[in-house]
Length: 447
Image (cartoon, rainbow, N blue to C red; front, side, top):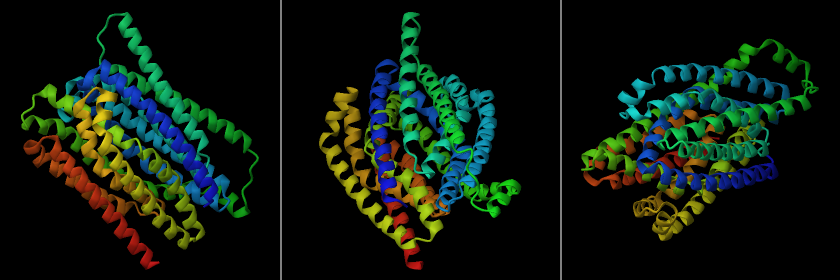
């Protein structure tokens, strides 16, 4: 791994992520003022469905593209790297297209019987159209991350965010001019338009890149034979990485989706009415939690670069360097998270009132501050585990963490309100950090 390329890529993604999240905060403030906390909560209820589809059809293949392309690039096999991208993207888009069709035609069932909110039906139909587009641009981004070309995904991320905000605002102005009701459909329409723009930008960038490299030749006759005769072999390699990773993400997303859907339902047992439970849910998921995740832009950016970088180091047999990366990652992320805990605890209430005009949001921000060291560290450690080809460990660790949170949702929220869920989040993140660290430490001792 080149430290210069890693640091450059992390810096680009961090600056882009900060800019994107900053725009996202103003966007969320705009939504909270136009569709209200309840509207934000209704829109947030649809996101687990989007996450489940991508987990089943995209994230595993995306991880396979990142890992395999990084390994091929490290070994100088550029043709194999491009073949992996094309095959993986085709599989991901095809699978997502099938699930998009199923969600679109069964949106009424999903809305009424799974999400328990009939008003999400039209949102699901709109968002389902974006699933194949999300798969397309996610796979292409993974290809560029594997090649340490973070600038292109960074630009597309900013372009996508600008498109989301701009299109939503245009829809808002149209609705105002026609004196129509402002509903969460506005946010869903903006999300769909941004995916169209991002997919088009990815295809354009990839077309330009491939046209520049069309004269690249395989590094040896062996590679030529591999490229022309072993599509099945490459499919098998992708499947070996994608299937366990997809199972990991799918189970985790399903459990997380159950967790998110249960929260407003269990709040009813805490004495709230339906409207108040959705409002509290909207404040938590649409206002307080995004602010806590804002500094994670730094660790998320490093994690995006860590996975292909660790995979490349493993392909070259640099185990000592990998152990150094693990130690530095733990130290840096935990110290950064500790600083964020101190900062949010001091200024959480002020941010809630100033940004969202909500004292409740400020209280939630201050309470959530204590998960920062563990949350930020876990993101990086999971990326390292996936880079080392250990999605099975991530699966068991994450299931343990989500089950702890679901337990707190089910038993603590009716007694303590949303505060009971915060206790579950803290405990689950702490246990997840310990599980990741112990597993990686044992891997080091065994090498």
